[in-house]
Image (cartoon, rainbow, N blue to C red):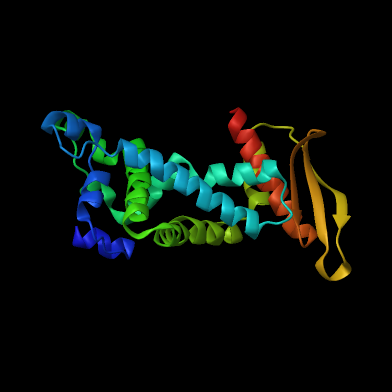
Amino acid sequence: MESIEAKLGYSFRDRKLLENALTHSSYANENHSPGGSNERLEFLGDSILGMVTADFLYKEHPDLPEGDLTRKRAALVCEESLAEVAGRLDLGAYLRLGRGEEAGGGRERSSIRADAVEAVLAAVFLDGGLVEARRIVQRFILDREEEKSANRDYKTALQELVQRESGQVLTYRLIGESGPDHAKVFAVAVDLNGRTVGEGRGHSKKEAEQMAAKAAIAELEEKE
């Protein structure tokens, strides 16, 4: 347990919370575990993660409308994102699984690993409070996502996505400007074959185009 605490950067006062967070229902059922499975912690962790992420996005992106904030939050807290965090923490190696789940490759199952991340987050919250839980979310999810977002070329990614079919036409158009000259915000829409598939805002036209492309990618991938 000390090694996972080192990776988290947090030492538990009550390690039973951490053990419970790593106990899958299959193990709890087979072994009649007195602490039960991590499902209740997962429930709590899901709410904590959503709240911390929403608070971060609300403050970090004061000009984004509710729909864009919702999409950003969904991308940050999705199973794929959490499974990636589990991989960095090597949570799979610490999970307590039942024999059947173990034999079926449960340690590598994304859903189990993602649930464990939420459970561990709840365990940190119960042991050390919201400040510590927020720090874990910031370090392992929010900071890295901002880094990835800053480095990704969404316009190129969108172009590659639509080029899977021939004859596709992408266009970007400025649909609005607001704010004083020293802090102007631009709004851009991206159209695919004449139909708007995404909108974005930014402090430059280039940034707004990138955000519009990102929204379009989310929209198109959701319909696939």
